Image (cartoon, rainbow, N blue to C red):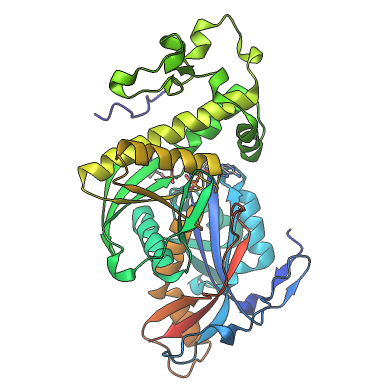
Length: 413
Ligand SMILES: Nc1ncnc2c1ncn2[C@@H]1O[C@H](COP(=O)(O)OP(=O)(O)O)[C@@H](O)[C@H]1O
Ligand SMILES: CC(C)(COP(=O)(O)O)[C@@H](O)C(=O)NCCC(=O)O
């Protein structure tokens, strides 16, 4: 038996419904993520008007026919514990009306939308009862991999390295992308060996992930929100809480085994030797130490997993990262340190939306195609492909807060 098994015991903005072409959801343990496509001539009333300043035809792809659709791919997130807010948003924006309508019983129309993550199961009844939305479930691992592959292959400057405050975009050669290790740091952590499109294996995981950081952080610092905890960690100093090698070795390095005096010997270990209560420690120091402990641990397990399968590239995704420099730096340093520079940690601009993008892409099979057919496109395409605007570089340093959109075109093949 697995030793880790738990013991039993209105938004005012409106998009005209006809302009939302597709919506997909990823409802995880902590966050519900939405990806939806809006046609370019969308009419948005309210404060969030986000019409592209660029002409969609500016997308350079001369070798292709004209796109069947131009528009934007939009990203949005909600806390899963506030799933009703997510439902209200979908309803107020009429996002679900871009789904496939299926008459279930006389007089009622059920709309089907793609959904992945555990919440697609957990909240299926809620979606049905409240808004007659039927969730068409896609496997979480399938979606993560499909989303990561799609983003890495399609979006210019999607992947980057981060170390010592240096962010460097990585050019991805589509023909040399595989194999790689995908480490998704959500509530828990999944590690997936990816060898191609739809060719992957979940090879490892750990329950010490983003949920642990947020959960323990909440208990230890009394923070009210994840962002507050993250802000605290920017300001803290983990030395106040962690036991360093120097604390044990009288200020000296333990050079024989390659440990400097400043290396953390024991995360939170300083607390045992001091006659202090929790309230005597600064919440920012606790937050910093916690973030470092969890990031280090994930970095180390990721490296070991990559080593086990001979993988040199590790892509980190999941909303735990939030493009936090310290988190990315810690993960990178851990991978670099343990692999002696052999393996490389990389990050994705759309880190938290891999599953949702994957679920969205799975709609090629049903949703978009049928929708396009219903829109009386002269010859419905047999296969759809997306081209994202190569000229539009996502926010450089800011985190992806869950409200972003990318210019894109849909082509038939
Ligand atoms: N606004 C937020 N609220 C809660 N958790 C957040 C937030 N932003 C980032 N996180 C972190 O992201 C984790 C969830 O990441 P995510 O990839 O969405 O996983 P899941 O699919 O399990 O919800 C949380 O456990 C937390 O560590
Ligand atoms: C169960 C999960 C796949 C759910 O995904 P999540 O909502 O965390 O993104 C994930 O939490 C996980 O892989 N946990 C680690 C379990 C383990 O291997 O120990």
